[in-house]
Image (tube, rainbow, N blue to C red; front, side, top):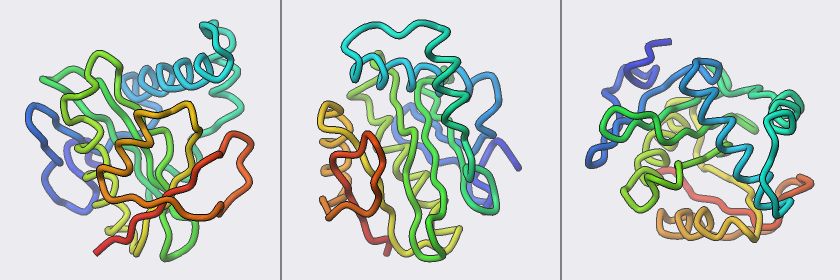
Length: 174
C-alpha cells in the first residue's frame, strides 16, 4: 500500500497543518499511536495509569484485524509532520464500515485532527464500497462523542454487544 495517500490513488487528506495518510497499523508510528490510544482508553476506564505490560497485553488481545485492504484501512495523522493521531476503518458488511481506534494525542486536540481523521476514514470507507459508517464508544469518552456529533454522526440503537460499548453512532456516506 502507498503510505503517502489513500489506496484509492487520491491525495492525502489535509486539514490545516494536518496530513492524514494510509499506513499499515504495524509501522513504528502507527504502533506508538495505538499504544497511546490503548493506554488512554484503558486508563480512563480503570481510573488509573496503565502499565507498559498492561498495554502490551491489551494490544495482544485486540488485534488490528480487518484494518488492511481489502477489508479496511488504517491511517496516521501528522500535525506539522509529527504523528499525533490514528484511526481505522473496516467493513462489517458490503454496505457498512466501522470506525475503530480513533485517537488524537491530547497535546493536539482542538486543532482539527479528529475532523481530518474522519474525513480520510470516510473516504476510505467509500472506496471500500460502504454506504454508511458506524461506531461504538463509551460514555466517559466525551470528546469522542462530541467529535462524532459535530461531524454528522447520530446515535442509533446498539448494533453490536461489545463489552465496552455504551453509545452507537452512524453516518450515511453520500
